[in-house]
Image 1 (cartoon, rainbow over the protein chains, first blue to last red):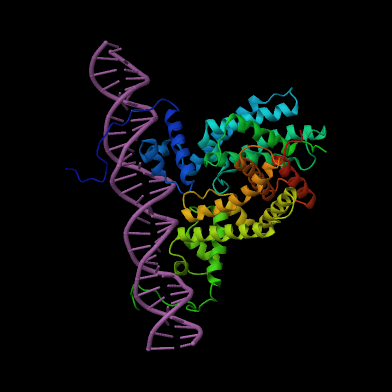
Image 2 (tube, rainbow over the protein chains, first blue to last red):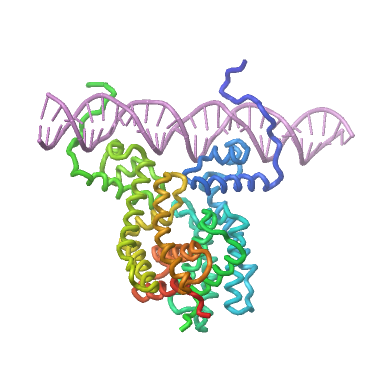
Length: 207
Length: 207
DNA sequence: TGGGTTTGATTGAACGTTCATTCGAACGCC
DNA sequence: GGCGTTCGAATGAACGTTCAATCAAACCCA
């Protein structure tokens, strides 16, 4: 009948998880919570509960809640970046390059809806650090190169490269949001229409 | 030497503000805070400080923080809705209707950047009530009617009406975000290019 | 191989802080 | 004088974070 302020043993502990596995479980739980309630709207114990672990364990893997959200952001920003970069056909015509990148992005969004929603549907500025924000630009610089090259050839509209890119990024984001909200269904046919529509956005005017 | 737990008088109080004025001041302060830090990232005393009033005064005008954010959302969603509806030329050709609506939205975004950013750049689902969310749909139903009519005439691409609308809404949102992030400048020329690009998104394919 | 030791992952109660909200006193105006 | 408005300290719940205790596994030397 110890009345000490220390904890009493209740369940199994001390068993280490396979390396890196526990960390990923925490990030997965955090993703679910952040997508539902946002960063500030999610409590750390809530993430722990979602992951099925104790609150303290989170701090064994991340020094702070902020470090955790930054790790999560980088993980998925890197994932989508690698996918797009890998799918990019350097030798193909711009129209083909665009199609490949566009479908890769949508494939990613459909395969990892929470990750896509977290990356694109939230305002991260108040808690992401400089390095995390820099990753965003690396992806966009790559896309800018593709667009700029095609602009010089007259295959894509003249005007600020960033404008054209953001119009398409924004369109895809809006499309995915509406799809998840159930405002329309994203069938193979619909995808084809949407891809063509996005290309028409930046394609050199028909005259 | 009163050691009571009540407060001592320090500054002027009790002076009533003109009717409705104080309420608007609070909403303006809340908008600034919510855009910067998000709803959950903003403390009520922070809003009070921004408004230059005491914390308690906020609760004279709003029963809770949640009621406040809902009032803010409705105020600006109604404002942009009224502007778009007023600017809409019912007798004009679809191309002209689209141009009018598009520029009205961008005008609003430039005139009220915080309001636009708050409405479109944040994920509201966790704190908006049903009535607030319903306002969103009323605006979109109106736009859907314009698009659907033109689709039947073959002036706009075939496909889910919502898809085409969301592509354009998303594109405009992405464009404004990039503009405010300083990724390009939104000059009169750029606006013209962007408007045409958005029209090309939904316009019936050149063939 | 076996018994003692070290390692480090895990726990959850506790801590100090901050949050949304309350409330009684103070104030200006009718 | 009383009513509507304003104030800001008080309140208790919830927050992010800490940490001593715990135990399973890995390790070590016989």
